[in-house]
Amino acid sequence: MRSGRLQHDGSPVLEWCIGNVVGKPDRRGNLYPTKARPEQKIDAAVALVMAVGRSMTEPEQFTSIFERAELWMG
Image 1 (cartoon, rainbow, N blue to C red):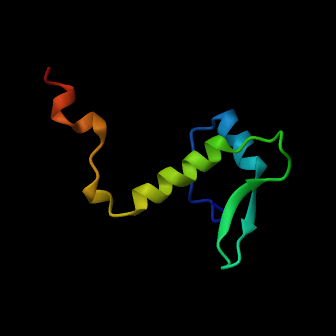
Image 2: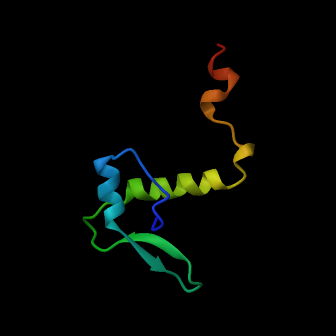
């Protein structure tokens, strides 16, 4: 994200959630998203991180649910 390679469609909610994210290290040095204050929301930012992570794990193995034939055939 810091490199500017991740872009979105300008959603104000996503922008707000991303602005609320603070990286917190664990004992192993991994960073995970958290928020500085309880009233801040980061749900959309966490969903984005999860989606990017999922897309990076062998993307050719996954087929979109919208591409499956059983959705089109009753």
